[in-house]
Every structure is written in structure tokens, then in C-alpha cells.
Image 1 (cartoon, helix red, strand yellow):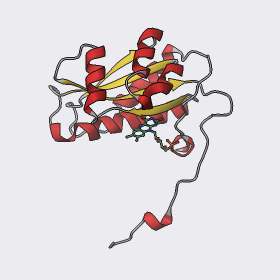
Image 2: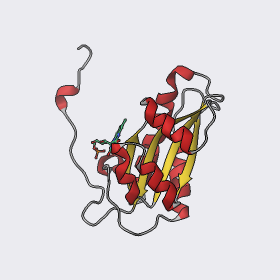
Image 3: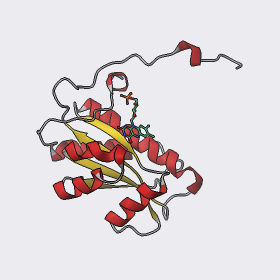
Length: 169
Ligand SMILES: Cc1cc2nc3c(=O)[nH]c(=O)nc-3n(C[C@H](O)[C@H](O)[C@H](O)COP(=O)(O)O)c2cc1C
């Protein structure tokens, strides 16, 4: 699957807006991820295109500044009322986030994961911004846009034979 190999974190975007059809595909891909129990997947999403809200997201923390350049940001949330295995909520959410990033690469979009959980101040910032109840936990922000010139998804070889162990360590 070539998208796995060409996906890169892309942090600068052109002015072109991401189409709603593509946003819908990103969300479908995210929800297709494996979860710790079928039917109890915790994920929910806030799609943000409003420029004022995008700016507020970019002010979450220093690592979120680049979100100000995004055409759309998707905030991934875990609904803890739905989850069957609460101890692995972050694994469930990571699977959804990874699917979303791979779909973005497939659609020739640029995207990057903005780390949020488990840093409490970042989670609190998003909870306050969106007035979330305690059962809804912010997981991360994915910043998305068409890549700025010269920054398209492209293969970078990250394979490292020395990390692989056969039969024993
Ligand atoms: C848990 C996690 C948190 C991350 N947080 C940030 C972040 O806050 N800001 C950022 O620019 N990139 C962030 N990234 C993206 C990584 O920096 C990026 O994946 C890594 O440098 C490898 O580059 P690549 O994605 O192009 O392969 C994060 C990735 C993960 C998996």
C-alpha cells in the first residue's frame, strides 16, 4: 500500500481549501480503524474550518502553532461512556488517527498529528474551548491542508533491519 510509504508529516499548506468530500473520506477512514472492541469504539470528531477556532486551536501549546496555517483541523475525542476497555482508550484513538493520516496521504493532502493527550493542560485547553463534559477526552488535533509547494508526501526510507529480532531477542 503505497500511502504507508509516502506519508509524511506536513506542517505548511497552500491556500487551497480542502473539499468537504475529502473531509468526509478522512472521517470514514478514521472510523474504519481497528478498536479494542467492535461496537465500543470511543472516537468522535470535531471538524473545524472556522478561522477563529483554527486560531484558538493553534494557541493550545507551542507545538500547535502550525495549525494556524491549516485549511481544516480535526480534533479527535474519546467518549469514555462508550468505551468497553477504558485503559486502552489512547490505543483505540491512535489507530483512528493513523488511518486518518494515511487517507490524507492517499488524497494528496498534507497532515500532521498534534500531540495533545496525555498532557493535561492541553486536554484541559480543548475541553474548555469546546465546553466538553468530563466523559469526553481530547486525544489529538490533526492539522490538514494541501501541502505548500515542495512539501508533498514522499517516500523517506525509515526501514531499519537492526530493529527486527527473529524467534528470540
Ligand atoms: C504521538 C505523536 C505526537 C506528535 N506530535 C506532534 C506535534 O505536536 N507537532 C508536530 O509537528 N508533529 C507531531 N507529530 C509528528 C511527528 O513529529 C512525526 O510523525 C515524526 O517526526 C516522523 O515524521 P513523519 O511523520 O514525516 O514520518 C507527532 C506524532 C505522534 C505519533
